[in-house]
Image (cartoon, rainbow, N blue to C red; front, side, top):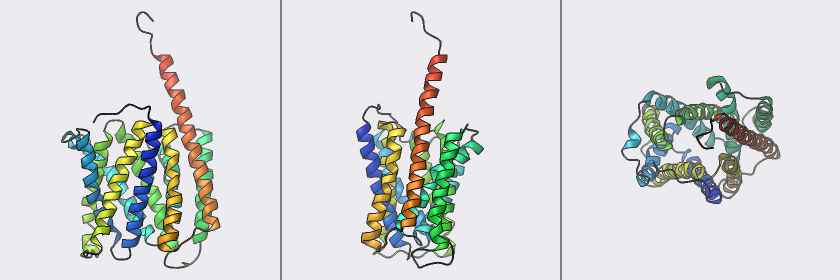
Length: 313
């Protein structure tokens, strides 16, 4: 696939912001439909119909049919198992939590990715990032303090919070495996195989209570997949036009959309505790992004210093 040159950061930021809108639209449809269908069935539709915009994107950049060629199918299976598990728990959480709370707890995933990268990829994590991760996880505990004790209602349950944490953990595991795959695979191949394998994995849940979708609900199920695929395409494209240190922080604008949608469509408002915990998590996450950026600059300079000078230089 052709890689457009960097140097259009504002366009990359715009794509990132639009991707958060697409993912919020996906989550909104899933939250609505989760009252009628089990999470495995919803995840199947989300993954299967995400392939439509993803394959259009890959075809636009001339990646068909080479996107399906990979000698590392086992790596894609591992990434998809983790991602599918995260999706299953995440959709289960959305059925039980306000949209803003599920979004806030999900912000723990990048912090857990730092931990897993140190353990599984042997990445060197220094004191600054470890401190940020610990502070961020304290913020998650602040959010979870709203859920200590018995369930407080159908839209705010302890079980839902547990599902959200599990979704964040398996999402971090999927992100760690994705890091490993990006060393040798194109983004298109990773996204396509994730959608295919996740849809296949979710078919395994069919004997456990799938419902035949009616015509009223079918657009919601299909729409969740379409918006999910569009969000993935826009997210991937955004990082092709700007540096990650600039683009990544705009992920947190999704909290604004979640609060607005939760209030307008589901009549829920975030608690003071949730907002405080979210602020802590977001601040720590942005610091981790900043440190990744600084370390990336340092590594680039070190590589440049070690590169032998060519003739005539």
